[in-house]
Amino acid sequence: MIAVLKPGTSLRQRDNLIAWFKSQGLEVHISEGQMHTVLGIVGDTSGIDIDLLQSLDIVDSAKRVSETYKLANRKFHPSDSVISVGDVRIGGGNFQLIAGPCSVESEEQILQIAQSVRAGGAALLRGGAFKPRTSPYDFQGLKAHGIEFLLEAKKLTGMPIVTEIMSVEHLPLFEHVDVIQVGARNMQNFELLKALGRTDKVILLKRGMCSTLKELLMSAEYIMAGGNENVILCERGIRTYETSTRNTLDLSAVPMLHEMTHLPVVVDPSHATGRSRLVLPMAMAAAAAGADGLMIEVHNDPMHALCDGAQSLTPEQFCELAARVSAVREAVLR
Image (cartoon, rainbow, N blue to C red; front, side, top):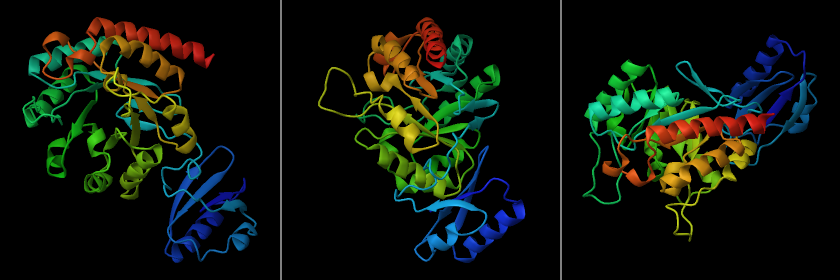
């Protein structure tokens, strides 16, 4: 249920109403807008008389929310959420590039790439320390050492780091990681999502390869229900009958998610296409569709990458992408 308060409602009046909701065993989330304050009421609201609520002098309108996701719902939070990662802001008109290799291979490699992508316009550094691979014989990442190398790159460049978590038991290793990525395969690992909900870390939640947008938002809800509202959504392509690309990039998800939720939405054209030559056009298309950021795989030697070299850009190609995406955004926002 949501209750929209009238302009001019005093803090005392608002707090009295909130206290009444809480006395009914309900949770209340406050969203302050320029004109109105929206109270999102979570819990069993069946005992609330909506006609009585709407008759209160301070209530402009009230309605029940039928969607099963509440905290992630734009109806609960009409304005865009802006997620802060240190000094970097994502969402609400703040567009950012997240770039780096699919996998951290060595300290020298990640330091070199970090400096290159920072010079090219990236605000956050991505790199896989734990790698979920389809084959058990493929490179699985440097694990704890990979995180150590990412932290060294952060010291060198000042860039916040983004890396993927595979298991709840690895969470202590992520104490100094700025953004914890939940990969497509773990989007519905609910025990992991609950654990992340008890942290104060920014979570980048990737859409599962066979998941609907509602399922993605329900996974975000697991994190937010635990108390952590610092969630960024990521569209990374879904599995369809098409085989000419690694996945099918669902760009309609960007404007659709912006209707459904207040959370920022970034796009990963690297994993979606699986082909480096397709990353640039799909990145520009994602920017035109209204994405709040892009996640781009960049490697200093893609031909010899230990993971996903075929979809990785060189630092020079990343610089070109950053410039052309910026031009697209300027054209769209005029």
